[in-house]
Length: 192
Image 1: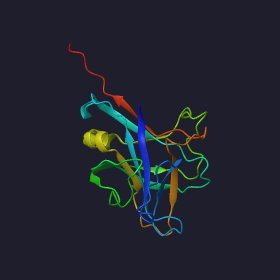
Image 2: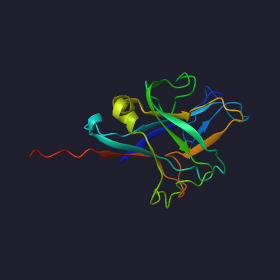
Image 3: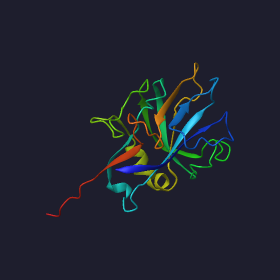
Image 4: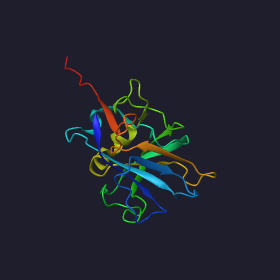
C-alpha cells in the first residue's frame, strides 16, 4: 500500500489561492458560479525498489467526501505530473494549471453522490471500489514517484458543468479515508 503524502486542488478561477489544508479535493469542469476548472494533485509514497516490470496491477482508492453533500458522476483521467507540487503553496498560477504527461494515462468513472466508498472509523470499507491505474504506473512510474498524479475530468468543458469531491488526507471525518494506491507485484518464476 502506498499512502498519500500530499494532496491539493488547483482552481482556475482562484489562480493565486492555495487550496491547501482543505478536507476535500475538488474536481470540476468550467462554467460554475463557485469555481472554474479544478484539478486534483496527489503524491504517494512509492517504494524506491519497485520497478515498472514488478507491477502486476495498480489501483488508486478515494473516498467520496462525505460532508460535501453532492457530486456528479463523470469520466476522469489520471496523469503523471511533469513537475512536482508543494501542498502548502502551489496554486493554479504557480503550476500553470498543472503540467502533466499526456503520453500515457488511465481513465475511470467516479460515482455520483458523496457516500461512495464510505469509510468506517476512517478506514476503507471492505470491498472498497478502486480505479485501475496499472498502465500509468507501468509506463510512467518514475514521474509518478517523483512528482505525483493529476486527476481531472476528461471533458473539462461540459455543459452543464459538473463537479465531484474526494476526501483529502486532511479530513478527520470517520466516514472518509485518505487516498492511497494498492500495488500488486508480479510473482517471480522459480528456475526449473
